Length: 295
Image 1 (spheres, rainbow, N blue to C red):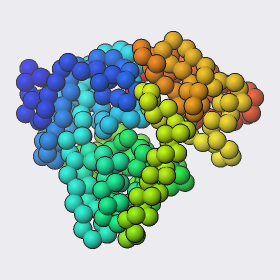
Image 2: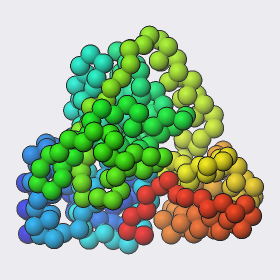
Image 3: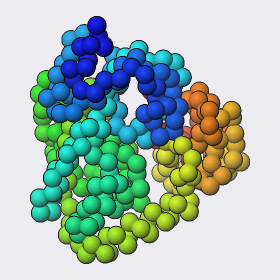
């Protein structure tokens, strides 16, 4: 009965697992998956889930997500079909499911600067806002003019200062059932060739330094206040360390990669081991950047 009712809110499937929905390709089966194709469907779905007291998990591109091997009996709500965008002069209005690399490259063609840092982050706009994701000393909050959120049963627009952005954090962490639905980004006009050159330079740098050919969830740990997480991991001799199907990348030791049949449990065992050894040796507590779910 629940399955039939969920079908009214978008594309429905009951044959998926988190392996299908995450870039690291690990995680257990899920009972229900729904991908709303409009904001009205999303609003109706969230209201239905709350009315029925059903557990649910919002997901974008699954690029920063580590999911446990146990079956999830709730509903996974994908925002990837909410991918409309509109460019107006030096601003872009983008729905939560817009893929950031695609948008960054499109803006480069238009001579609009501001997302170059994110051109290699395989996430959606909604996911980047939730995490205040960033790279190369920049983060998504620097470009945000406003964010529209489905809060309860209404759409509310927030200014960036109202979302308490800081390093890999936003106020959304304290409100897991708030749903980012769209944002307005403020960009700067610049020579398109200059923007594209910077994007290409950073893509080449990523290809040379990160294990892009292996399933991963991106950087595992946040950088500490001084130095880099990979330096501390190297310092305890964990570059190349392997447990089951998960290993610390030889190419970049802040990336844990799935070598084929890795599990979240193996991933997290390595995480906890690294945290303990780094704390013992350097008196530094490494905090994870990845989001853990159903673990």
